[in-house]
Length: 324
Image 1 (spheres, rainbow, N blue to C red):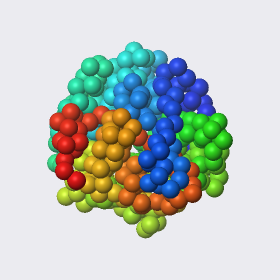
Image 2 (image 1 turned 90 degrees about the vertical axis):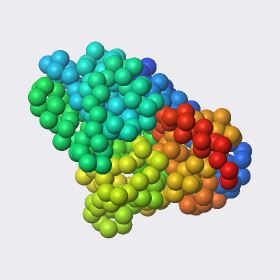
Image 3 (image 1 turned 120 degrees about the horizontal axis):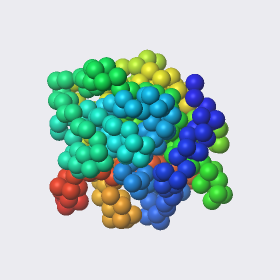
Image 4 (image 1 turned 180 degrees about the horizontal axis):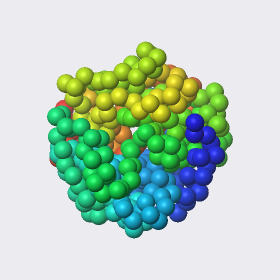
């Protein structure tokens, strides 16, 4: 299993590559939570999400022979951009299998970073099967979005920074809320957080229709989402948690929380109006959980992560102008 040593080693590799994003606070949010809320805005990264952390950590450890054959990944957009940027920085060709209906902003950014995009239908095709076939044909390395130790360790550097920055503020983290798709960010951050604050309560946050992690943790085994499920949180639409990430989460997670798309929209409006920050739907679920009172925040210090800010302008504008 991954430990703090692997996360600290990843942090050393990422030094000077990623942004050490700050912890933000907001008086209105603290009032609503009746406690202290610390926000980690990973939307401030160069690609607008935390995914550069895991992607660069993995790609930077490839041998020259592996790097020469390139890499292949699958992603709805944020991991795609992370792999594309890591490849650009390290001189490694990156091909990414992406859903045809991925947000235009994520497709455009991936192309701009030099990524080769291979599209598929997310509701009728298996992206992993496509990616593995392409990798086999090219002799390329697979870069999973969450089910890999180097990916988890890289994502965990965000949690390491939260713990360090909270300590610098003289605060102890009581709660950590992490948006959860496949579980790479959650697993890595949980390891790092418990190394510094062993008593912290860690929660996954998912869209209501994609609560596979919450149900898996409750059931004691991995369970899948319904193929008919839909949500605006495109970054979190995984079928089920990974086996590696699930095994880690079972040891560290207190419980799984869920939020509705309506609560996510309200969180995006709150972030823009009160924090002047653009957060994508999947990145806003932690804030949505706090605003909706899903976690016990009274008198506590609660950390949340804005995992990304890559949202199409049209969708963002429509959400901001909705009548509530």
